[in-house]
Length: 356
Ligand SMILES: NC(=O)c1ccc[n+]([C@@H]2O[C@H](COP(=O)([O-])OP(=O)(O)OC[C@H]3O[C@@H](n4cnc5c(N)ncnc54)[C@H](O)[C@@H]3O)[C@@H](O)[C@H]2O)c1
Ligand SMILES: [Zn+2]
Picture 1 (cartoon, rainbow, N blue to C red):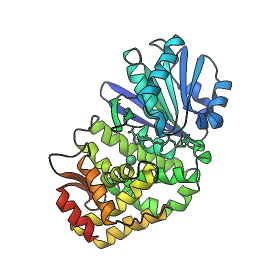
Picture 2 (picture 1 turned 60 degrees about the vertical axis):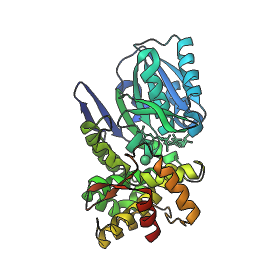
Picture 3 (picture 1 turned 135 degrees about the vertical axis):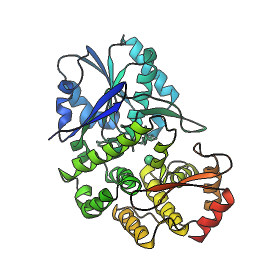
């Protein structure tokens, strides 16, 4: 069964389609265009891209295949892609298909937003993280040596097509990484969903059909609600940062090569839930619920917070682009399905984290 969500941003609206095996019929569920550019990475190309191109019908498709990994999110890569598109005479009425994880989605979306001042694109996410998070919301971008996602655009796709079957080839580590964001939605927005996750975590990790579609649909609906209310991150969208203040700092101090983003988020959510408890925002029982769900993800979120590591994290947290003034912004759980933004000075954050 295909589930469809409508994202309605006033003047722009687009569907998110979620189903098992729907990649095979991708050409028939897209708007008719004479030319498509398929942007993917080498790994995803081997699993899905080659077959898609081989069976493509009714229009021309030009594959552009990138090296896999975060290293691909660069200006250099963007220049290579758009130059190739110019050489292929790709015109304004063509479209881009972004087939892959968040890296492909972010780079391809950014290229779509600037190529000939903007052409249509479709997100076809193949990692759990991309299916529940990065493909929805229209944030695109690349990294600079100075920081991750420092250059980019808000640019909504024409459609998002999610084939849950692609998760069958995803390495378990990346599956768990995506699960971090799934758990995050439960904590910040939807307590019913949190209890559903507690009951079904085994089924989710074993990708049980039916359950995985429901989980992805629920997450996309929750993210869509936030994006519709706050497309450009003026306020509400900040709730999505639960676990992320610590996660981003941890990723930065470990040079982005120790933890996946989701693993860092699991660690961050663990600490930030404890901070919420310490500040009296949540009760011990609720803290336990959050912690057991995090642990049930299959990743051990414990971290030995040495004095050096703490100082390193605080240093990075004070540079976070979401901060205001001299304080560090934390989005902390504040009850079932609710969060609160807590602004702490570096000294306050240090004191609090030392007490945990
Ligand atoms: N735009 C946003 O709103 C947003 C939100 C969150 C994260 N992001 C970005 O997303 C990126 C991380 O995304 P990611 O975790 O998907 O990483 P990724 O795109 O690097 O994919 C992870 C790995 O899995 C491989 N892969 C992808 N799909 C596969 C499949 N079905 N089977 C087997 N292997 C597969 C990829 O080749 C890659 O090696 C980061 O750059 C992050 O900044 C963006
Ligand atoms: Zn995240």
